[in-house]
Length: 414
Image (cartoon, rainbow, N blue to C red; front, side):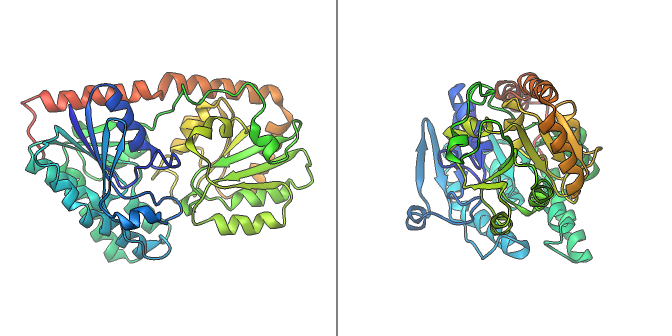
């Protein structure tokens, strides 16, 4: 099967961010499929483009048997609201020449990843041009998030944006997303259930395992063996509700045996760094190499998973898969009825979004009850192995894609 992955975020060789399409491409190629990728240069979560890609805006990279065709992405200040939308649109337009380069290759399936939703029209039209099947994968609902969090405003603009979004969704042969709540939202937006697929984020259960020895990060951060480490590792973005972490750290500042570690990069990093200056129980780490992920996640006694109440059912954080695979309990700040709560049920404790006092109480409970942590951690690992291993998730994807391509009775979406 020839598969073209069209995804702005694709740079697993750098940091592991954008790893969804990266791991997918590598797994598919290893399984014998021909894979090509069209992507923006590495830019996320720092929203800065490395000099080598500024000099080669239409670079071609090789990653094993995979060819990656880069297209420019223009950045317009902080990635919020209109500036973020303009950046998305710039990649969507400037990647058209790279799409046209694939006409002769003629893929069987064009797999477009949103974000960015602005890429979807190009992915669909190109699939029609070469008579390939079109598949849109929705990692989060960008339009709903933008208006829900106040990044974009205006009732008329919101109504227009949602109508355009629904029209785009309906054009694809398949539309997948990562949780049952998000799948229900696709149906509510008018996408036929027969065209939708649940395609959850997967866990690298082979590469990320429960760490049996002391993590090297403890020594690097001067954390004693007796201290309990509460770790957040991932994108430091607005929709994560990260302000709850320093608030909880301040409440627990009297507990000298509790240390908070925040690892990552993003727009919230300056705020968190400023808060950490006055709190001795917070350590900050920059984004770490992907080959150190298992060691980093093994640093945690408990993983932190805060989420903004405005975005919790519009996106299911991909970081949750690594948390579960590492065999550590999770302390989440989310609604009890959210998809996040359903996933970590039995694997950790939940507090309301934004409620630092409730989160602090849960963290004290986990810090003081070793048996509870061990039990939660074992259940987390079991869930990862049974439900979200990469071979299981992508094996199901290949089966569905093969049926779609081979079945002549199913007409191409308009």
